[in-house]
Length: 193
Image (tube, rainbow, N blue to C red; front, side, top):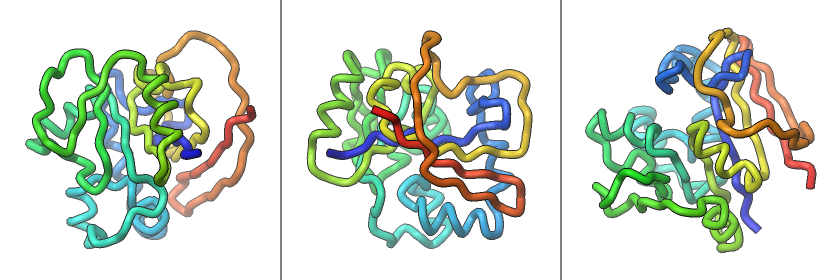
């Protein structure tokens, strides 16, 4: 069965973006050995425009073949004139407000998103990349099998939380971690079931 992986950037204090959802500032750390790691081991998660700019758009998908993102995350791409930010993946955008998709590669989904994620996990293929935001992650919380948290050496004090959900404890086991010279730590956790 495929895994749903929440692959996310976060501050030391657990915020995935500013109060308005902006997380562009995390990009300042994507240099040197850390950038090589991201473009080598996590190339599937790099948006199509970034893949082209970095010269890695020829790489096959090795971890993920599907991405689910929230409406606000997708809107950042739309605002930049990009209708298919992850053209190398099957793209699902969770939205109650978007009617018709602006791109044939993007499927707009709504309703019971947890049931949809469970269905996707039973399909053959590579993993499923959950690409923010907090509300969507909260709705899919029970279906998240893996957390990949890229913790950046910054405290935000306030902002968008990792999960927009009610209080409840879910246990995960640390599978691996990697520390980079720029202060970024990447931790991978597996859900304890």
